[in-house]
Image (cartoon, rainbow, N blue to C red; front, side):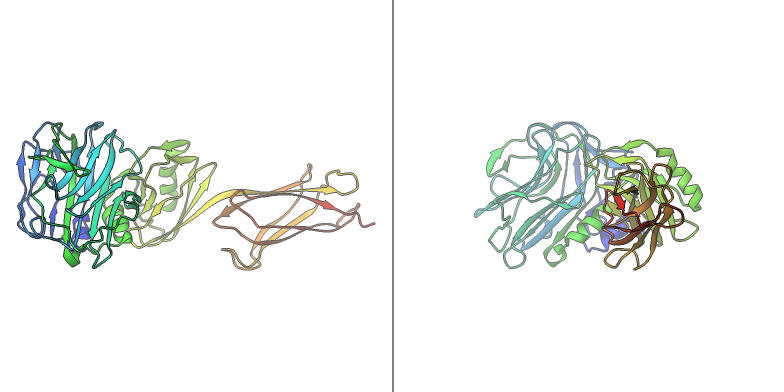
Length: 428
């Protein structure tokens, strides 16, 4: 299903794709451009163009109607994709309604930091973005107002993650409605507007691009945290890398092209399509992810993908928008060293046995390790870790002299694996 269909399924009152058109894709609130143009550089899924502004006075203005701006609203939501094409210093308008006293606005400035703001005669609420936006990196933005007859909350999201640094900290308007405002605008406002309740003339242009913006009014503006993250953001994110559908071995070969790489800050680093073999397993071999990347791996099939971090890979943020499942594991080592308790000499050929105990992901008594110590008295095995795994373990040496009493191994297996030295008592 196309991303636009996913958006429309959430019942917005208006939606502007900015895919080489200013038309409202749901109603008749068509935009009017002043200088703004379209470029063939989309910033979200299933579009071919995006809206661009890069000089003073460039904007798209919306009609003044009750579902957007010109009546009091008990609930309101605005969301869409934006990319800054330069560092913005004075406060700039990404999307805004209102003037110097009544406003609903998403602002960028101060070195590409976001501020989401609502102003009325009785309150000013501001929410501050957690990170500075990277130039040329698409982001999904969402702002939601609910009066005190509903959630009594102003919410803001960056790539589907709720932003909670706010003034006041409770983000509560403590009033029933957001007062009527002047027209909605993308880009440089036509008049003087307020930031933080103080009139500011935004004389510098915002340099950026827009795609798939939508507005919800009244009861339609009931968007949950999950809907904002999974429907609005995850389904619309463009991937840096796509592993195309094929056999398990072919898809592993394609993924191995990125061994020993660091994936950059992105909405979505790696997208994995469905496998022709059904449920499948892939290994990420020393592929690490920028700390600010929003999704590390997304699986768009409907089977089960077992994804294993090996050799330092650190995938931890996954997405399954098509109904499939990702089981995320990290390959760790179990290392057991066996020595004689009397002189600490290593014991060669000792049998090391470990099985799962209840309380972890594995069924009780699942065999994890069954091997003998080498010439250095060490036994090792790899283990694909998902969560803390309780174990029962023992070590025996009774096949040849010197004989030893059975020793025990304690758990659990953690994200660091398991490393223990077991001292055996001679039994002769």
